[in-house]
Length: 487
Image 1 (tube, rainbow, N blue to C red):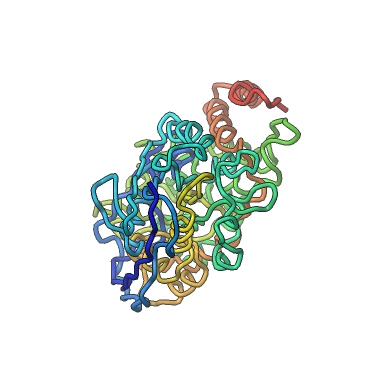
Image 2 (image 1 turned 90 degrees about the vertical axis):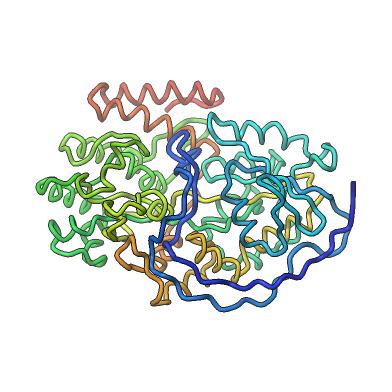
């Protein structure tokens, strides 16, 4: 059934909210950790902390925002494929004109919105996309997928030009200039080999080193971010500081897996070159550094999201630092527990040895959508509108993908994260987003990262030599990707 979509005028007034810093909700760990924020599913579903931060100053009222498409023949049903509730909550709370009908449906004007939620566990979400997207153009009008979401670990699989399942944004009428305030790495994640952008994100999940202020004062003599950064400025200095922490009874990190994403985000080449799997020098350095730290009892081999990993969220856990984005700080470090370090405002944030990111969600328009005008408006409103971006940052604690908004928040002295002892993290996160380089991502990243970490655990635990662990990795990766060869 076809109908005309009429434009809706809705006044959007931004309200004051409690600021918890800059981070996004993520889903429960599945593979690596969410996908953690996934490593296919990275962090546990985020619950808004019970007053984790100081009150933010009310934002200025935004001018009335026009949402929904101009008149035109388009579909009467908008189908959105997601793996959890996060994007639905952002649309419900921030997209002008959206009306909630029930937990899985809504309305935008006269268009019915269907939320099709397939959890990522056991790769179910991707398996679902692999089933419905290739034949989407031939699907019945009311069954067509209009929007689907992806994460960085597998984004290229769906934005690849040959796959032809995600529309180039230019085909929707979205120009490069429309996305000029977004960080480049968030564009690189969803850019195909021809240079066409096939998605956009409202999040910029740059990350840093989250340190225990009490440990910093005891061991380093200061918990001031500038002084702490000097002690973790590069990996050589980081490893020297780890020895000092160990002498005082602290683990430098809770597990070797805490640092993996930092190293893997800074590789010099993709995992796969000429169909061969190649271990980058920076990944090899992670192995060398991690083995030394494990042997010196400066860290452990606990799994991310395990009870052993999270012991350091409390003072008795005696862990100096974790690595992560703002969503980890705000939603995963037990800030609602007054006995935790977060609950006592005892963490600080610095850049650390290398810039990196963790997480984020990208909005893609499905090839074959019969709602291109509405899809365009949703993408532009949710990823480029300054007022909406600031509203999301204040209300939902997302680190938004908008340079102007983050600069504004960074310069606002009324913004302070209580978990970070009142520190305003926005400038550091904004600067960190500029450091992220996604030029070496590939469609094999998720599988290679997961299998490599699993294999190296045997080496770190003393159950295998490095060569034996590497052989385990090579065997696993060619079984997972038969088209590849091991190095």
